[in-house]
Length: 239
Image 1 (cartoon, one colour):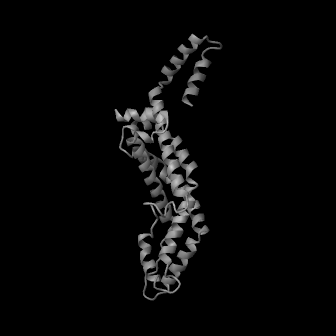
Image 2 (image 1 turned 90 degrees about the horizontal axis):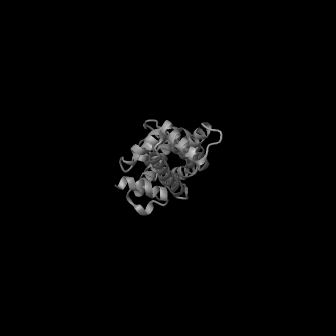
Image 3 (image 1 turned 180 degrees about the vertical axis):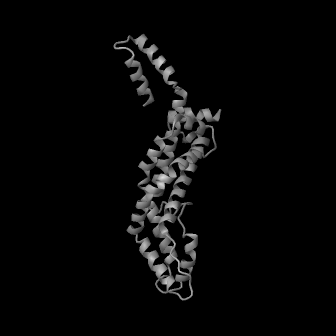
């Protein structure tokens, strides 16, 4: 887009410039707009690296058992463990913990399928200056930037997907039955921890965690730099 603006700016300065005149006008336009081609390459490279990480993370976690069989498996919320531990002794709820974990992770996998476009919008917001700073930052600097600028919006966008997904796999129905059974037990403090926020946060934690791993890989392993731009840009980091 910046290059297109430069061309339009140059063309606007003359109706029919010669090739030599056009080159001079383009140089002038770059000077006026203070464009650094090297910085533009860095911006493009960082965006590409994040997109590669996002695509890999979404593909991995959204597949069947993508969360369940990964280090990012969604577990029972801490404040729900007492409910699960107690009701598991009641007939009909023996397998409640396993069933609930399976359903929460299935919900996270369904939500992950919707993540790609949301992450893409966040990546597009990265400025050239941001990218230049990130390139020379920590191994997870790009992921930190993406999480810091996009997590709140992603949480809001994920919530209806998570809620729908939890209902689609009957997780909230199972949880409601477990809580109802627990609250009927005499002398127990009434509890009803929410699953929605927990699954949403853990799904996002896992997504960002895997993106972080992908970013670190691209930064440290030349073999994972799968395009000329990635090789060129991250070579600057290596020097």
